[in-house]
Amino acid sequence: MKFSIISIFPDIIKSFAKYGLVSKAIEENIIQLDTYDLRIFTRDKHKKVDDRPFAGGAGMVMMPEPLFNAIEHVTQKNKGKVILFSAYGNLLNQNKIKELAQEQHLICICGRYEGVDQRVIDTLVDEEISIGEYVLMGGEVAAEVLIESVSRMLAGVVGNPRSLETDSFFHPDQYAFPQYTQPREIRGLKVPEILLSGNHKEIDSWRKKNQKKREKS
Ligand SMILES: C[S@@+](CC[C@H](N)C(=O)[O-])C[C@H]1O[C@@H](n2cnc3c(N)ncnc32)[C@H](O)[C@@H]1O
Image (cartoon, rainbow, N blue to C red):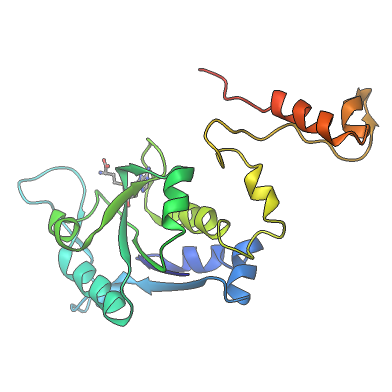
C-alpha cells in the first residue's frame, strides 16, 4: 500500500516515519511512503502557497494552483483516493480505517492556515477526513494518525495479527481488557489470581467482563 503525503512541512512526516512499526513496514516494503513538498509545485520565486481570502476574513487560504499541480503530479503517476484533512471532515474511526486499508494508494493533503481553496475540494478531493472535533495547526499530525492506524491493519505490520482482534474497536463495542506483566506483586498490588490460573476459558470470560468501557463525561 502506498501513502503519498502533500505538505508544506514534509520533514514532519519523514521524521515520524523513522520510528517504530511504520519504519519497519517501510523497510519491509509493506507500505511505501512518499512525501511531496507543496512549495515545489509553485511557480513564483517566493514559492507562495497561500493568499488572503476573497471577501475578507481572518487568516490566509491555501492557493489552488500549487495544490492542483501537486495532486495531478501524484495521480498522473499512480491513481488513488485523494483525502484532504479538515477539522469538519468525516471522522477517522476504526470502521473508516478498515475501509481505507482496502485502498492501494492514499493521497493525503495536509492543510495549513485557514484551509484550502474550495475549488480544489470540489474537483480533486474524494473525501475530507477529520481525526477529531478540535482544530489542529495543520494536517501533518492527522496524516501521521492515518498512516499509523491504517498501516497496522495491513498483513505483516503488527507482529501477532491476533492482537489486532482484541484491540479496542476491532468489533463494535469491543474495548481492551486490563493487562498485567511481571512482577506478580508490586507495592502490595497483586495480579488478579484468575490470570495466573492457566484456565483459558475462565481467563477469556474474565477479560470479556472487565473490558475497559468508556466513562461517560
Ligand atoms: C488551522 S486548521 C484550519 C481550520 C479551519 N479554518 C476550520 O475552522 O475548520 C489548518 C489545517 O489543519 C488541519 N486540521 C485541523 N484540525 C484537524 C482535524 N481535527 N482533523 C484533521 N485535520 C485537521 C486541516 O488540514 C486544516 O486545513
